[in-house]
Amino acid sequence: MGFVVLIMVFGESTVPKKSDSTTEQTISSWEKYGLIPTLFLYFTRLLTLLGLPLAFANFLGLIIFNAFPDQPKTKVLEKFN
Image (cartoon, rainbow, N blue to C red; front, side, top):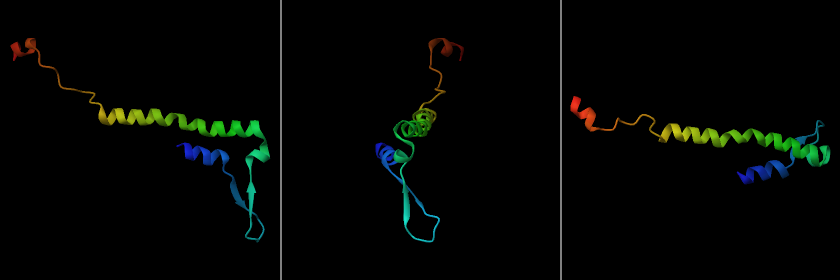
């Protein structure tokens, strides 16, 4: 997970030029927008990942936890059977 975050934060996207040449133009958001707007944009981009731990825990709870266990045997219920 940390490796993916480092790639997103410090990586640079490459966009090919519209000309016929095969060279690529590198666009850096740090240089284009500045420090504060770039940090805000990356923060909002990563904010969408906050729901993943909750979704994973809910999924495991549905799969592993037995929500409807058998009724416990009691002496009161055995007298009526």
